[in-house]
Image 1 (cartoon, rainbow, N blue to C red):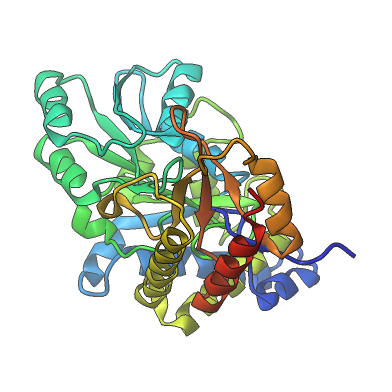
Image 2: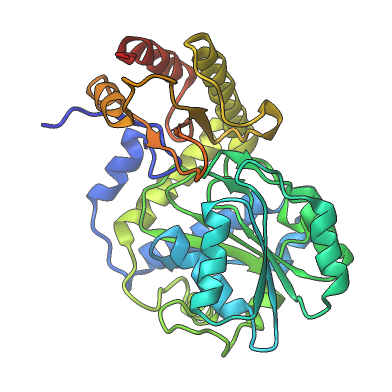
Length: 370
């Protein structure tokens, strides 16, 4: 049997034993004990997490829909369904996942403009505002919240305020942040938020989800550029058929996600989980510095999700060998994805605790073969 290891990545990530055990039972997609008791409860729980209890009336403005596939499939479902033929999308890009949104727009032949910043550069609000002020054709703005290319946390509140000021629909890719960082969709007036089962909620891969203003989602009717990624059709089916999915539901993954939501609540909700992630990340950075590693980003730009580190300045260093040695000690890290820097990444989300980070640091100290 292969040795069990901890996934120190931005997803898929290490899950609890009880989340894994939730997948051991088969479910019928026609039964109410699945659609009503699992799917519909998930949809409601997501709304509860997304909209603050301080603004309960605002939750009525929002709805949720689950989509089969990877997180990118859900992003494509939103981009391909929410933006009409007369609309124009502005993409804020400072990493691989912002670029992926732009690539989706190109594939779907959607009118769009991309503002590209450096991968280690925080988006410049003055530049973004200038574009919004001078191009009235723009109707939607898309941004990645946590750009896991580097681990940077992009400016959510200031971007949301710009969208409100210029009356643009804000599409937020919160793939790696929702459930691990506190924010309120209603307070920020976000139009569409996209995330995935296998991120900070700590489920397993197989579906993503979209939380959107109900009014905006209803306007998606007839606009989809794909059959299987028709966001409105999926939502309408779930609404009218008590949680039924249009096509085959990933039942085991959905049940695992329901268990993961229960465990998030038992942990104390998003605020408690965010605190654990922050503690993990701060412990990681401090320990890596003691071992001679340098973070790619300034500390003020770090998210609590994943951190990039420069590769060691040694001719003997190879990431593949470093990776192999850590894996034999029970830890899996991530290669770098920055185009102009030699680096690697370490995530600290999932079923990971400060004691795990301390064990990782001890393993890294032993694995520094160069």
